[in-house]
Length: 60
Image 1 (cartoon, rainbow, N blue to C red):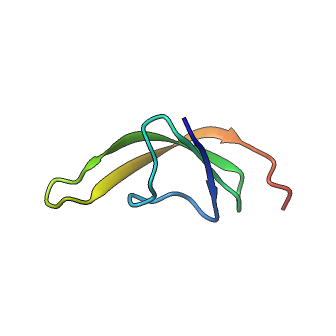
Image 2 (image 1 turned 30 degrees about the vertical axis):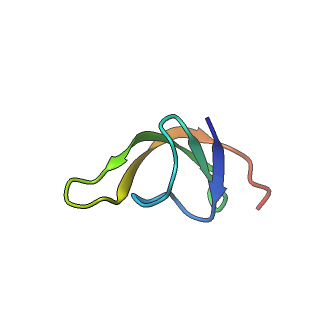
């Protein structure tokens, strides 16, 4: 499982795999990928990121 980081919260098109975590470097909020799959009407992948309630120190 990957530990991803970025500026701002992850959105439906933020790539990841099931179980990956994503840290918002602006706030320290941690999210977990709880769904990764095709959206219903096209071939594009969609991702669901759920806030875990954890925070990490970002140094900002």
